[in-house]
Image (cartoon, rainbow, N blue to C red):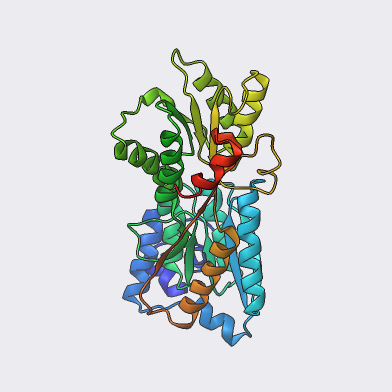
Amino acid sequence: MTEVARSAGVSVSTVSHVVNGTRLVAPATRERVHHAMRLLDYRHHPIARSLAAGSNQTIGLALTAASNPYWVELVQGIDGEATRAGLNLIIVDTRDDARHEAAAVANLLAHHIEGLVIAPADGWRDLTLPLLRDHPVPYVIVDRIDPDLRADQVGVENEASTAAVIDHLISLGHTRIGMIAGISGLSTSAERLRGFHQAHQRFDRPIDPALIVDGSSTSEGGRKAALALLDLPDPPTAVFAANNDMTIGALGALRAAGVRVPRDLAVAAFDDFAWADIFSPGLTTVAQPSAAIGARAVQLLLRRMTDQDAPPQTIRLPAEIMHRESCGCTPPDLVSAGNH
């Protein structure tokens, strides 16, 4: 390591941070260190070192710890499958911020985890992905699938599921459907937006751009977006919220504005949650198999930990449309609605 530092013109501690991922290092400096490592044939194997010292059988999980029921169920699925495999689990909060995510993952790598499950933040390719490429630690992407990346990934069928619920709203006669969209830059947000467009194209219906409002994937964002839609000169007759946090905010805004669901405005949402069916009216949602997604991610990780040369897999699990009254269906309609 001293020879690498001398060749790269940096301190030994900088080399240590690069090879162990314990601190962010400027890209140019990191590349000088890697160049010196290649010249000197310096090889770093954190997994082998961990095994030599006595493996701790620990994997990491990096995702936002926002109080969202979807993430809770996902973590339960990951933890349950990890426990069945005899693995310990360390969870870090990325705060959905690329810089914080990179620091959190670097900390996990410093603890010599044997594998990582990650729900990447927007911008992770610039900061976190280089860390993972610098260290031969198997990883699996969960929820936020990157189609351009050769890696093991597992998530839900966002596009088809969104298109199905929008199809249903259109079939009920809605011609102006508003969408409260999630954070731009996330694959889940983009896929659900494509599903929204896909359904309209299928029915040859134009979309008024004013009907698509950014909800920032938060409750407060959902509240503001719902109010913005209500303030349009020609407001929508139905609204689709692209995650459950935004749904909660939107429903609060509608109640405060005296809007009756579904009499004045039909509502549907992505993500089911435990109390969706006890709202009055019950909330029509796209239900993700959250626990199954988490369990499948751990199974992919175990496969990768056993065979690092295995071809990468991308797995999409189907969602289920939970038809309830908020979309405007009367109880007899719900039977046929299940076929949409």
